[in-house]
Image (cartoon, rainbow, N blue to C red; front, side):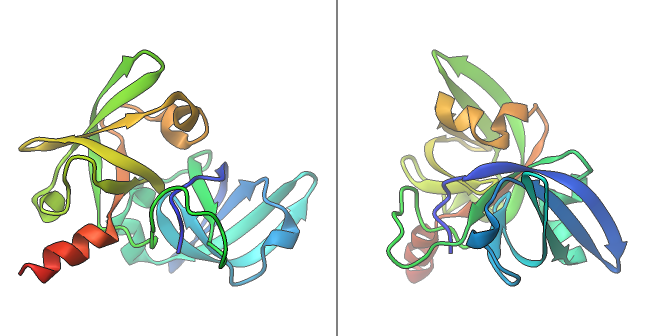
Length: 197
């Protein structure tokens, strides 16, 4: 389980096809904080580290990613050099500054527009029918693993506001119109909605 507070942005340095894909990400994590089998939230996807290597000042983490995960997330457009939002799994007693994120991507959506307002950014995303019932103004959502608040919901779009700090400390600073992002709806919204059916 995660909080949606990105700890750092890693860089994809290797993608190997081994039936599934093996993806290696360069990070600045400390080796003492991780072990083989650790769960890491990578762009909102919970992945298990199977190999950890320290080279110079960087820690290289390797993950196996199934073809199903590739197809259902923005990892389908992943390439060497891609920037990935990273968060280590929560420990009992950790501060939860965002909201509970499970690392189970519900869908992927397209970025439709970016508008800068002061030092913040208002970002519009497409809104698929499959998640529409879970989104409401002031509700929580995870986008590429980032805990965010929904500002507005329309017939075919939803909007979030990104503050300057989040913009500069996540892979949002490299995002472009028509890019695809991973979405996980708020678990409380899912349960509340399901209980009404």
